[in-house]
Image 1: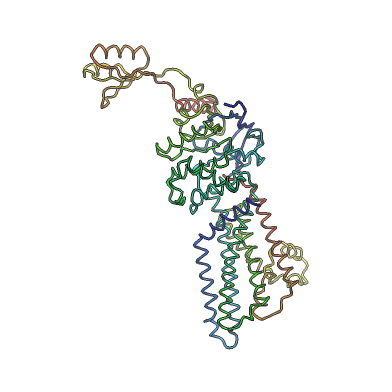
Image 2: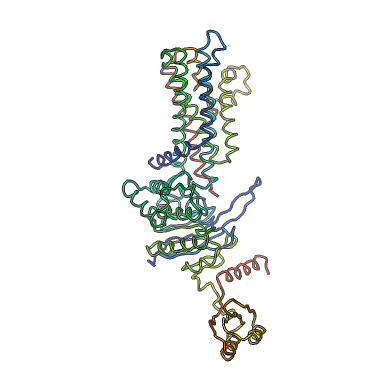
Length: 317
Length: 258
C-alpha cells in the first residue's frame, strides 16, 4: 500500500423525500469512511442498506443531504475527483447498438482522451478484460458476464487510480465471478485502489483487505476482515474413510452433526477435545483420518451477529 | 464542447435507430407526395393544395418526431441507466443535456431536409418549373426546423425531471398552447377587458409564439418574406429554444439519479 488516503467521507448522509407528502427516508446516516491507497475495500450490507446510495454520491450521481467526501483530496463536487475514479454501476447497461470498442472510445473521449492514445488504450483494455474476441459483436448480443466485463473495461479506460465497483459480481455464474475476482486482483497488482460493494460475503472474505458493514444506512463495523470475525473456534470437522459401520454410528451419536459422503464420513464436534478423541478412535478402529479442521466464524455469520446486535439496540432490547 | 459533440454523435446514431421516427417520416412522405393526388379534386387550386398539404404534413409529423424521439432520448437514458457511466465522468450535466439536444436537432434537420426534398419534388412534378423554390419555400422549411427545435427543447426539459409519459403530455400541451395562443394573442392583447391583461402578458412571454415561426401560408400564397422579419423570427425561435435548453440543463444538474 502506498500509505495515502484514496477515499474519505465525513458524516456523509442522504435523506430521500418520498411520496406526495415528501416523507423523509434516511438512506445513509453520518458515514465516516477512509480507504487507503492501493487497498481493496469491501462495502457490504443487505439490499437497501445504503451501499448504492453511498457509491452514487461518491461518483456524483446523487447529491448528499449532509456531509462531504474527498477522492485523493479533491472534493467530490470537483470534476477533478471524477477524473480519478472509474465507476462500474450495478447491472451496467450500454447502448445495445454499439460495439465494445465504440463504447470504450466514447467513454474515453468523455474522459478527455483522443487520437492514437484513445485507440491504443481501448484495444489494450479490451484485451485486459478478455473481450478482444467479441470486438465485432454489438452489446445486444453480449451475455451478462460480457456486459459486466465491458462495464469494468469502461471503468478502467482512462486509467484512474481509484475504482468504485457497485456489485461487480451480482448475477454472475461461478466462472464469471472468478473472472471478475481475478481482474480485481490484477488491477490491484497494477496499483489501483478498489472500493466495491456486494452482498455476497464469500467474495469479500477472499478479495478484500478491509471491510465496512453497512446496515440501515449506518456503518456498524469497519476494519480488516480478520478483525471483524471473532476468531473463536465454533466447531471441529472430522473427515475420515474406511470406517467400520458400528464405529461410524457410535461416532455419529457423539457428534453434533454427521453425514455419510461418497468417499467416507464427516462428523462435526462442538470442541477440539471431542474431535481429538474421535480421531483417535478412528485410527484405533483401522480407519483413516482425511481431515481434522476447526470451523471459525465466517464473515456471513459475523454480519448476521452484528445485524442482530444492531436490531437489538434499535428496539432497545 | 468536445464532450457535448461526442454525446451528440452517439445521440444521432441512437435516434437513427428509432423505428417510430421512420414510421412517422414515411407517413409524412406519403402525405406530402399524396398531395399530388389530393390536388386533383380541386380546380385551379392544385398548387396551393400541394404546397399546403406538404408543409402541414411536414409540420405535424416533424413536431411528433421532435416530441416522441426527444422525450425518449433523455428518459430512456435514465430508465435504462445508460447515462450512469457517462455522468460519473468528469463532464457537466449541462454538457450531457446539450449533447443530447444537439444530436436530436441534427436528426430533425435531416428529416426536415428529406421532407422538404419530397415536397419540392412533388411541386416540381406538378409545375414542371422550379420557380416555387424561392426565399419563402426555404424560409418556411427553415422556420419549421426552428419550430421542431423549440418542441425538442421542451421535450428535453420535461424529460429531465419527469417520466416519459408525463414529459410527452407536458410537451404536447406546451406546443399546442403555443399554437393556440399565437392565434388569439392579438385579440386578447387588443381586448378592452383589463382584468386578464397581466395574465395575457405573462403567457405572451412564457408560451412559445409558434405563429411567428410559421410561414406556411406565405409560401402557399406567394407572399413576400422580408429578410429582416425572417432574421427576427429566427432569432426569437432560437433564443426561446436556447432558454428552454438552459433551463433543462439547470434542472437536470440538480436531479438525483436514484
